[in-house]
Picture 1 (cartoon, rainbow, N blue to C red):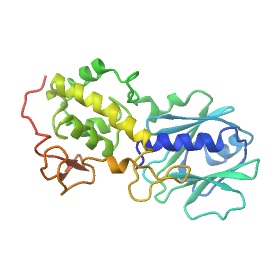
Picture 2 (cartoon, one colour):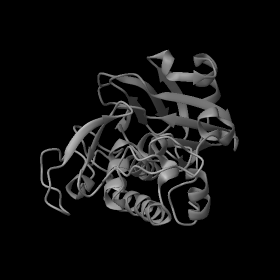
Picture 3 (tube, helix red, strand yellow):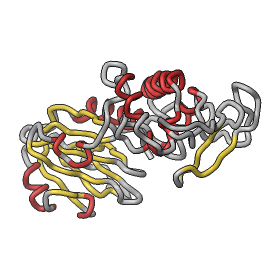
Picture 4 (cartoon, rainbow, N blue to C red):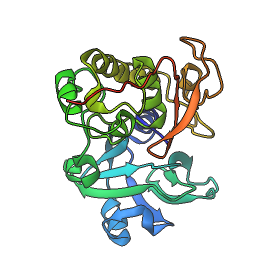
Length: 280
């Protein structure tokens, strides 16, 4: 599943490819991908709209149009491709935005889990999926004091809590594993038992690992590519994710994999010790 760094890379690619393009018409081949409004209204509303910018909030893409905000969530395997209108339509192409210059943007999705939502201009943040998101994982928005305060309220294990997107947005399975390893925190440690030093390390490493991944264009796992057809390179920097059975780069112990909150989780049992502590 694309996480924040991959979605940010898609955003940059789309900005280069389709910013300033005007939509002539839209074809929808799998209606369920359009969450709201109804498909016919979605198609009609987009006629003549110009893509003024492409923004991102968490793992959501927001196309800033002349009169609307079009929100897109790629979910598991959604991706965009940019084509000439003469190019053959590929399998799993579910939504096609035809531009008035004989080019088009295609949304492809093998599993059909992705969704599009259309909101009036500058009201995307009213969408239910965006309303609950925590701050972006950058120093200017992700406040350490608030993070520490909120963790003290939570008895939940730290990994699923970070995956919830409420305390900080953009973390998925890959980058949670990486941040927890760097911070030397066990993925099942209860959030309210983390001490001040651990929270500071975790805060720092969340910002660092996501920032580094954005710079690298994301992580290519299996067949993921960005909107320009390029593969990310952060997979070469992964320290624990996908490394089960390999030696820990810090202590040399074997990296283990187990299920935590139904998610495959990679960790070092020596560097990431579970501490039996009382919560706040």
